[in-house]
Image 1 (cartoon, rainbow, N blue to C red):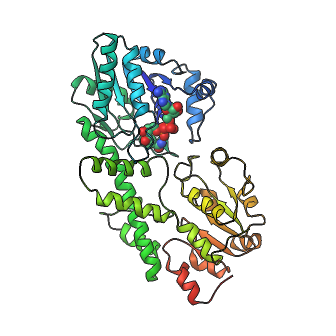
Image 2 (cartoon, rainbow, N blue to C red):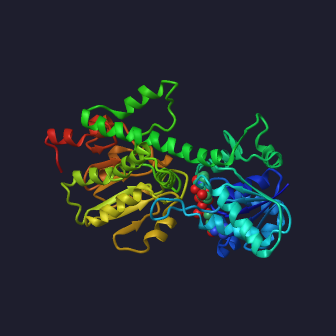
Image 3 (tube, rainbow, N blue to C red):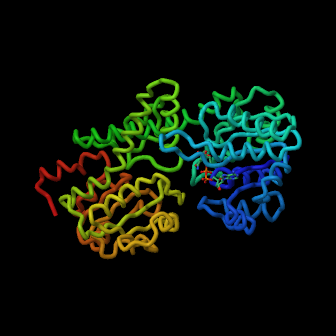
Length: 454
Ligand SMILES: NC(=O)c1ccc[n+]([C@@H]2O[C@H](COP(=O)([O-])OP(=O)(O)OC[C@H]3O[C@@H](n4cnc5c(N)ncnc54)[C@H](O)[C@@H]3O)[C@@H](O)[C@H]2O)c1
């Protein structure tokens, strides 16, 4: 089967590479010339485990092609997948300019029947807008051609994108057309072998399903962070509470970690966009708004704890930061909690010495050279001359640490653990002022009661 994919970001490139790997012939189109030139040579612009090998292999076998020529992309196949970005507008709504630009491009170049598949995360009603944009373009060209627009939201996670795409829990397709259903079945047949993963529904329900899934996951995180805040104030330990509630099969252990807030390119913008949709239809989405505001508050937690440890004066303090990406196994820094932390450290006169296994280039790109930011080549170097350590991202290599050694590296025994990686009692025994999330033992008030200060 021939497939065209517009957009070679996290979703488009993974989709293109996986479909090619399953035997389809795939043309990936992007407007970013440098990216496409790199991809043609097998150079991957993002960090995603296993993706480089998959692209390389399928390039060599001639099933995966890259182009900036949208005409070539439209001509290539009947199936046209849109996987371009939908960043947030100022008001939180999804910016559809890239999706609609692709729709018009398809309308401009198509000369036979097309099935347009919307894989980008888009608000309910976007399929209608895409349909209108294509019809309008065809009208200007004074041609009449048949086409269908369906919704096929993507649920992959950065860091395990290939696995998620290949072993998807479900494949949602929003369409009422039997013909489109058959084509989508054929497209996904290689990934739907052990059971039928395709769930068909109307377009609007498919569009809403994607937002509902992300909003549900974000809600779980904010809920746990809310309980963690209370646990801190009540002298309880959120880790015990997590185990206690997770063992109830109605709740389960997935996605109930407290931490320093959710980030990334999806949850923040998707929760906002859904809340914005609610506003547009005159419905007050109280829960969604609360999920977002709890998260915004949680993103300040690491800085508040750090600042507390130094009596609210970080002037000339050097803070080691382990982990910058919004989660492990990705270089994505979009809305990462580390950004709130390091920007707050700078604003209060401190310096940052940071290490991340994948997001260093992205951090340099975002912040450029600055005297108060030193990016180091390993976690040990980040500690050199540092006054305290904050852990933002739970990369595997940060999950064990020799506290005795760590204490000799830092000027002050201050450890702020944004991911609850360590046992508070062990950290305290080793002489650390250990601040975690929602763990009674690491309470600021408790420390104050004990009269401990630096
Ligand atoms: N990143 C994720 O984990 C994830 C998961 C599920 C769904 N999504 C959704 O998928 C969509 C894409 O996300 P992403 O993270 O891959 O985005 P991205 O920003 O990484 O990549 C988007 C790509 O589209 C290209 N592009 C923009 N306009 C174009 C055009 N007119 N023609 C061709 N290419 C064009 C850009 O140059 C860029 O390479 C978004 O709607 C996002 O919400 C993302």
